[in-house]
Image 1 (cartoon, rainbow, N blue to C red):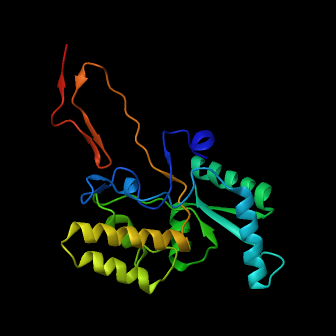
Image 2 (image 1 turned 45 degrees about the vertical axis):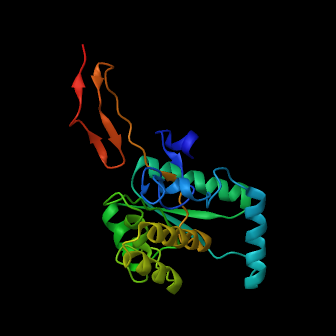
Length: 219
């Protein structure tokens, strides 16, 4: 999807928290201080095996109708169609696509009237909590309606300590739990593409935006 469909410099998602979000306790990116929760390349045979095992455990031989909701947008459409094709080819799963204008789409999400739906999120501030806080039980932005008391406790613990080492370790545990249960399936991390002339120096790029405060022209 990143290489053939999006083609905008995005990075394959290996968890919820994207690259560029710092882990102050380790002085590294948060994503660099834990193993990938999701492989960068698909494991189709394993996915098919797990699907078959799951259906057997649930005592079902045929999946119910699966609808993939997405809001109007050319890239959203292409990704939805690609996922539809991949699941049919690799898993034998039929997926119906349903497109809606943004207002209708968001209303459907708010009501929980969907099976699978696309969604994009960004950080309000440069901290893992900006992402992980979204999946608390009953949270306004928890569109997945996922609920896990252990996860809630980990987030509460992280919010209650000023010790960055303890805080980061706890947030890593929370993300690991979230990605184990997978109420969401991250596809890629957003990117921002910029262009500048060589004579423009000291332009700073970070996930929060582009800073020209220290920039200058060198003729």
